[in-house]
Length: 434
Image 1 (tube, one colour):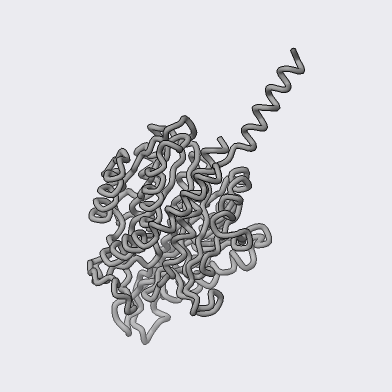
Image 2 (cartoon, rainbow, N blue to C red):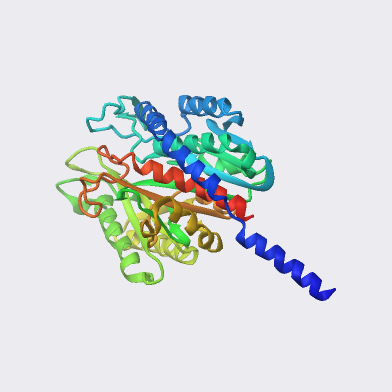
């Protein structure tokens, strides 16, 4: 009896390990991906031409919802303000797999000659600006719309349920508002049905066309914001000895902050960044003001290092100001946690990426100091996030590729097909392996 039971267990383990998508279904789905590519590009161009800022993605959400409904997918709208969630139940029992795309654009004025370039204008933080998909979220939406259509066409062969999460406000909610992945999680997007695993992708204008890059554990950094207020004593610009110059104090604080990363933390463990991105002070050339304010960001990939840097900043800011007769206050706000790819999950899914891009085009990379609020999902369920290269072939990714969040941002749309194939392979391989 004991031998019989052992044989049965071994048989079940073998079935679990060897279960895979049939060659017939695999070939069919990849052909469908190639067929839908022109429409996927068309969707991307429409969304690119009519971008919407965080928590304002109304028309984008309407387009997505209409598409999902036309496929017979159950649709929820108004999630985290403008988010859309589609639920597709397969023909067979299995896991619940979430796929996520972000929808929001940026307050950037587009500067190129694309026929579908954005002409949208808005007021952001009191300033007139253009609106642009300068980070590729338009491609993410189009790729997930295409993924949804192909999986819906193969519904009877799906094992489990697929939840399509179209998320607003990845770039951050407007001042005074909640938004993004944290709000979607708060509103239960990972429940009903309960999600077992989540996958997400990001297009990259600075990576070679068709290359997929990834990393287990910490892929992208935690992002914290800080604000420093410096209080001095106002004086005439011709007689600085009569006051305490908060601008000079601010300059000393900025220089000192840079020594935290360069001299106080072990960078062989993980990278870190402290950046002052804004400083405001004064109203007239010949008046030393009594107040200055600066703000910036902190990027870390280790929670212990994160706490260490925060503490060093608090001490340094207050003590530097004191040494110059001024007073300073610092506020640090934790914004986005580390984008953490579950190591066990990452090991299992690399083969799925290789089927999409080719083995030589799937490359493990070092950590990235950019941040992604996909991390909030990964705090709740195992998740995997990866990059899809789309650098135009006439540009060198290492020298003259145009970066994200810039007016000249541009991608080669052929990279989207690789991203689509990767999402399809990840979904089918995971549900069949389970």
